[in-house]
Image 1 (cartoon, one colour):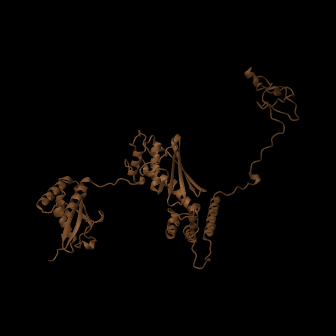
Image 2 (spheres, helix red, strand yellow):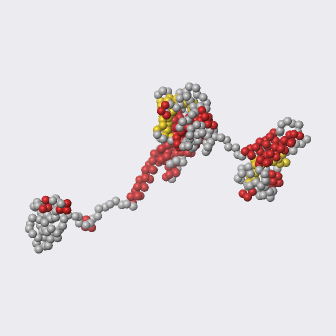
Image 3 (tube, helix red, strand yellow):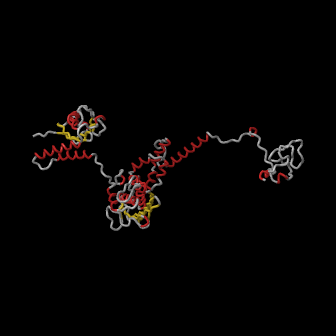
Length: 471
């Protein structure tokens, strides 16, 4: 007996998945379109004359030119998406629950008439698919703090909240920090450490938190985390002790109100916010730099970051930077300092920034391309300064006849004093001295009376006394 070849496919229409079997060893795209139009569209509550397109990824349309499905890259078991126009997205007939109920009744009737006790695999799969369609898209709960969303926290954090009696937002923030240390591979040290619970004595007197950890990648090391509340902030100090002599420390300042909602009222009903930001900040500024410094001090290879990349990828990343960024990157660690001194990088930058090309053999192989780039850079800066000076020529003193005659020098005698006995009984000086208040051309102090000149002073030729206004 000769078996008939069939291709089994899955067709998705408006978030509803149906199974389709096409006869023949090489079914065509036209046969699949006819099956969808005649069978699947009416089952989904759509008219048969609705225009639609078929796609493998939901975006690129498969054009029907009479070709086979295998020539389009379709194999048995693939999911074919039906792209409908916007006007046909709403279903016109029964919802998914009705279809699932009808199919269960049909399967139950079939099982009752059958001698087999259990359903077949294909029928069970169909029922499971319909149940998934009823429940909607499955959204798994977050496993890590960096995967949290609004209102959802990892299950491990929920267990910590259940076991620890938090009294303030700082306690809740310390639970999240403890979980993030566990996510990065640290192991809690202390007596009677139980999974899902905080270690004994983690909350000391005075609001201080003390925890100790060890890491499998840091040999013979112990991390002491001491957290001290300072006003509205929480200062986390992490000290890594290695071989009882070498130490490395990091500090991070956090605000509990920024990550725990202000309506927290105690108990286990704690609502966190911005746990993704907290995870990124805590790990990037505290955990990873502490581990990197410790492994570098112990002479161990790096675990993450740019130094871990292969030399080929590292050179591709470094050649995209500018000279200032490369110089700053060279001060990070020894590995990056050696990578930034690669001659090929500076030769690439010399050609990119200054368009300098050298023919083969024009320069010796031991040319210091970094020093050559430095000379070109200084030359460019000097040319820029000179170009700016062209618009502002230096000041040249003008010729003397074209300039005004300089002012006469100041007299050597002291200036006049306004009011007081000095003006009433002036001292005879070698040179005549006039009163600075008002000009009296015909009157010389101590000489006599005016020469046929009417005084402009209201009190005669006698100098005015400013003290009269206050008497």
